[in-house]
Amino acid sequence: MIKTPILLFMILLLFPVLIGYGMFLTNYKAVLLQYFQVSNIEFGILEGIFAFGTVIGAIVGSYAMKKIVHYQLLYIAMGTLGLGVVSVYGIIKLDVMFSQSVFFILGGWSFITGLANALLMIPTSSIFLLNLPEAIRGRGTAIFYSIFNLFLLGGTLLGGLIASSINILLALILSGGILLITTISYPIYKNTTFMRKVKNTAISR
Image 1 (cartoon, one colour):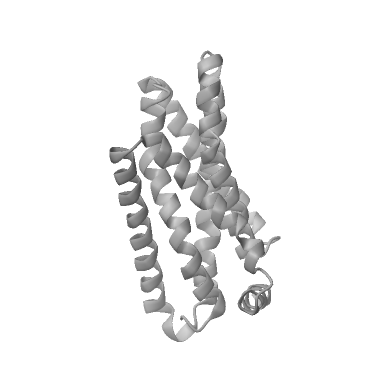
Image 2 (tube, one colour):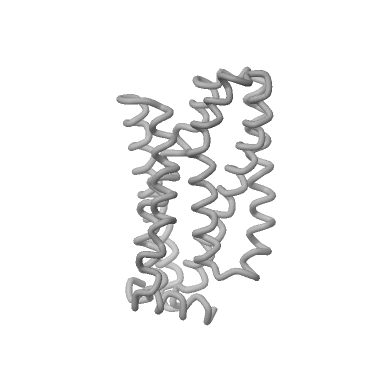
């Protein structure tokens, strides 16, 4: 499995992505409740909007995968989620000035993060499943989900540690920062021999 360029690329990419993603999942609800102090009803509505965003993201992602190379869709999703998460700092500033309107802004934020959440998961799984050699399809899938859950658990634990020892908001913004940095770093190595092999593998699929 490691000898397949696109799968090795995915394993290396998954580490920072899932660390950041795990930190996001750990802290975004706490930020809504503690920083924005939304009511129980408002929190339920925002969760519903987030879920609706994931449904739309799944539909859009399935269609986009027919038009866009899978790993490129993954980078788009990473950048969108990272930018959306970091923007929560600006929403907090708006909350100070326009507290009556911030709930609607949070609704848009929840939808975008939910959408990006689904767009992130779809190509991640698809790239592995499409490129696993037939001979190791079974155990390769098991290894993939083990790596996936291990990295995600690491992000969850790190997010909880930073939130409890330093600041919940910092932990959330840091999670978005990790996703953005990972996305922005792509031009640095996109023309390397390794990435050319990844592109050739992805396009041939």
